[in-house]
Amino acid sequence: MIPRRYEITDEQWEQIKDMFPPYQTGRPSKLSNRTMFNAFLWIARSGAAWRDLPEERYGSWKTAYSRFCKWRDSGLLIAIFQALHIEPDFENLSIDSTSIKAHQHSAGAKKTQTDTR
Image (cartoon, rainbow, N blue to C red; front, side, top):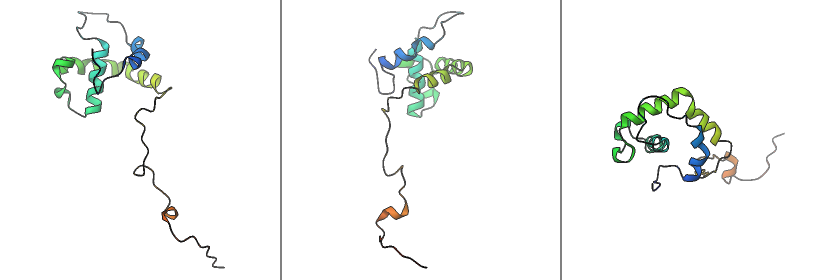
């Protein structure tokens, strides 16, 4: 599978693949845990509704949503987040002047000392 814009890399998948529980009941899914996790990322990163999930890539949105709810309710998604935040890669870190406000005196005000005693 060719990784796409909103999907995790092989290296990232290796860090979390063992956290997913083995399938236990009923008919096994045709879609892998990685495909379902990528579907969640697609929804989170694109801001689209579940019904807009690309079916040809991720399968039915209902399947993806039900698996999301199952993993969310079991605490798996929180456990994945906690495991991955220990060693952040800072890939999406961005600091610029729109996120850091300067003190009013750093704007080039006159730098003379005024003593009003």
